[in-house]
Length: 396
Image 1 (cartoon, rainbow, N blue to C red):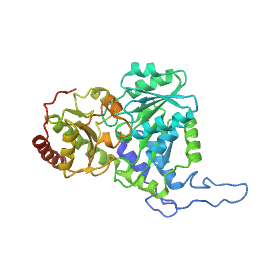
Image 2 (cartoon, one colour):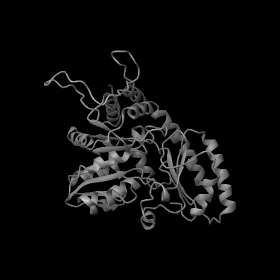
Image 3 (cartoon, rainbow, N blue to C red):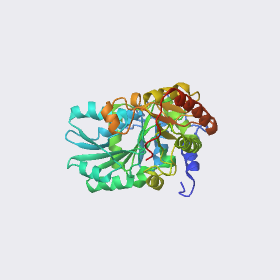
Image 4 (cartoon, rainbow, N blue to C red):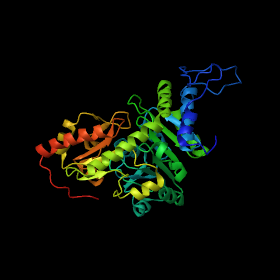
């Protein structure tokens, strides 16, 4: 396909495939666990759906093209994709990981992989010197989330990849928040891109899925072996739903991101919001770097109220967002990371990661930005009147 076409056009071309037999404009849902073979010696491309299915393959081909990788892989969840990626490591290997990594990844590292002799070091990946110091002779992977969840810290993907290559290890990047619409880590030197496709790629809170894209065929072969061996593949109907979600990803996430920018600017003007974390704000410490490797601040922001009581009062008085885990849907979703996404971390670990007791994460959906701001303003009135709030003391 021509490189000159815009990404939104490429996205549609990669997700719409005319069936040669029927002319159907949508990829068929192949609800078959097994496939007929011609004889003892001639086996077709597909034999068993765990190993390959044409519907899932259409999705995998699409995400590989959109991320600019060699091959894509669809898993039963984001954690299934992340777990398969870390199982590229062997006993005695070591990984460098963000100290504010997603709680599910934290759980795998601290409670599962360690039992198999795979070690890790938590660092601030925004600090290249700290990353360099953490690398050991047995380090095989540097893992990155950027922007991070939930404090939206920005890590230099290109610089991390350079460090990894200098030490002959791989760079894994969780690209869930940005999606290939706004950020393509493989183009910046990463080796493997991971997605919780449950989020923006699905976009409708109706699928649990994970995606991985390998930069090289050599790495892709290793990921495929694990995908097939472990068996945590994405179901056929969910694969079809993700293909449908991909078709509208560009317009959905751009609308959400535009609203998120306005909502973030609103919160910076509220005395009750002690900190606002959004890389689209000019005073965000990673704003300049983020603009070099991404084309938008994204659709997720976090803001910190005085304490848990203030956060509770706010959540109890908003009417538009869903209060729930997850993000990236057509509806705005408000989350409380200390008890949701990062509940696996103890209080000290959360504080070290910058996740205070008053922190709320907001995934902005497709509602009108003015309606959201009006709703949040109303909720802040309750916070102001019912909870003693000190003046904002920290502003980056």
